[in-house]
Image (tube, rainbow, N blue to C red; front, side, top):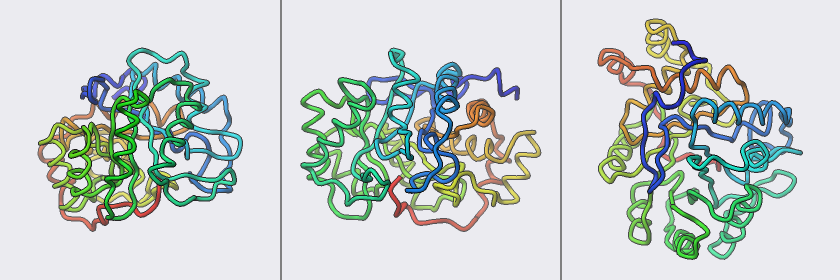
Length: 309
């Protein structure tokens, strides 16, 4: 592949509610800092570099950006970088954000928001992004407790016109059923990758049956999580990468997209070269043999990520 000439259109499209997006998007978690994300002592990234990556992503056809108000480092906020780089926003750009968790100005995690506090988080995202409504808001969940009150509060904000579409993040199947009884759900954003458990794969399949987008996070990072891309790729991933002349990260992304037409990838990076490679992974077609190799049994993780992200 010639990564510099391939655009996100090569990955195909899916509809988030009434908004059509390319299946390769961009995750903004890694944008505000160098090194590990979501830590109080994160080292801010160069502002110009971050803005340049965002603008280049849109030039490469990315029209689905995932962000959150709690994605920030000292001096830099992902939402405000997006605003500075891309406003006035292209008509086809869909910005999805998350609410539920929060961090204080020093970067320390706060208790998850109550239903009453969620409106303040939505308004914070609106202000930082410079929008009068949010395209997609995902309720981020940690644990197995009922989400009805919190999701109901977001459904009220949707009815009020502050939110266009609702989604869920880091949830289990019973959460999805509970939420769908309250309001339409356009996406589920969960941890997922080549080491996915049978339970995770079944949940992805269930979302496809219900025409709900499945949006994996950490699909490249794997066990690296907030620290970034894993270096512990399996021998199978390396073998497929060599056979196709691409990187292991591109194989992990391509495998993820091969899991269903409803799967939307949101790899994040602050590096222009990695950005081009991530977008180009949307054009990588894996053979049945390659997919079988990657699907060989490997150790897997639990279906929920216990950390907010």
